[in-house]
Length: 335
Figure: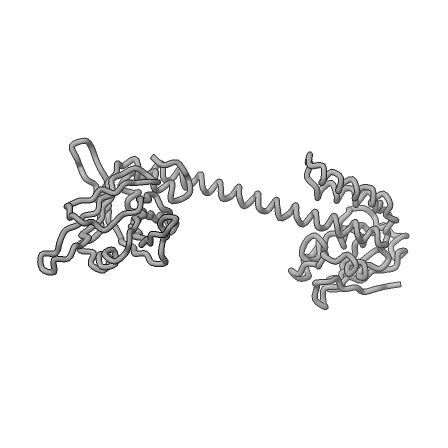
């Protein structure tokens, strides 16, 4: 007796026709999945092989007990010698290997790839069982459990492959940075200062929702003690100065951008708007790459208002390479 079934989660055209059990008993037609004649098939041996392929070796007792439970259920499964045909393309297979194939991947023919990208919903064993004529409840349950394990293992393998590819790309990017000169690094590096406005509370300082970003340009300086790199903002930051005069305190974070990837490399302690005007206010770094961050303040001679005239960051060339690597996530170690 033939039966055409649609599995849960699939569309109307994604269906399998289960043929009479003796349809190919007297022929030497080979199943494309098992590579054996249709009349030669061991249900329990197949399920044991699929379970072994779907479960990694582990010392976790809970997983070992679950695997042992499935092996015991497999030993109680009745033989399944049905034959099934995919209606869209007409290719014929042993029913159990075909069902396992479509339950663990997309609904596509293993031979010609006709079908769809839909996946069978295996979360409800009862629904799957209703779509499997001639499969006893024990076999349906085992099939669903092994299929879940197989899907999980495939996802884990894909994640591992993705991590390996990212690591390879990461190493390649690191090597590229190591081979670049300081001048080449500076061409790819964009630095900006983020001013975060803080409010003092009973438990310390909390950042507000407002911040102010200032772009900084780089220069190579020849000093007495060697070459230095200096990042410096523009002049007379009047809008920023107006906000800084009204906030309780503020902090400065230096951000670097390389190839579209951003990361911070300098964080200051909470700072206050200066009462006595000095030409330069040296900012203490509490976390980040060593270097000198200076805020330059003075009083506007016309308005008599204190203005932040500029911010600069000065460091040695070696730190530019470290900042680039840190921004790309290549290193978490600061100089």
